[in-house]
Picture 1 (spheres, rainbow, N blue to C red):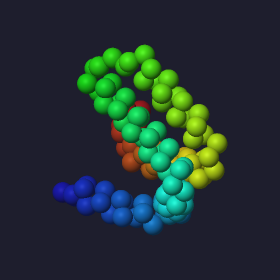
Picture 2 (cartoon, rainbow, N blue to C red):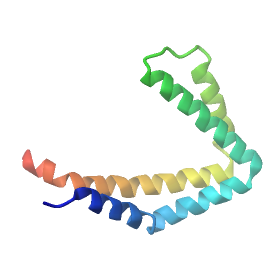
Picture 3 (tube, one colour):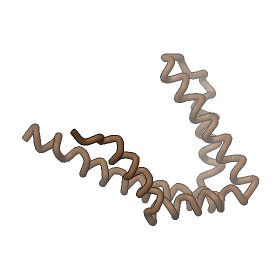
Picture 4 (cartoon, rainbow, N blue to C red):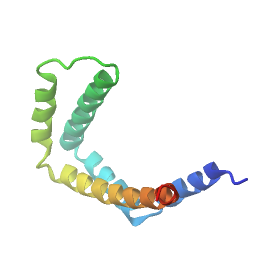
Length: 112
């Protein structure tokens, strides 16, 4: 019987060699060189994580939780290194969606 985890680990290694991953890595490295942009990015990530954890625990958001996240989002949306990172994330996400479709094909075929 095949060890599917070996294949998954190989795919993870190969993913790091793709153009999309390399572009994302470069964009993130460039973002980290801009201290202000990176600081705002980290604040946004931290607030997002905080809200995701609250949601996972079934906790209610405080009235200003979403507005703080929106405010941070408004601050970062036009910062060039962050815009570049988001574009590269989207390209990698598209690749991941295509890979997921390929991997899931046997299941879809099974139910046809």
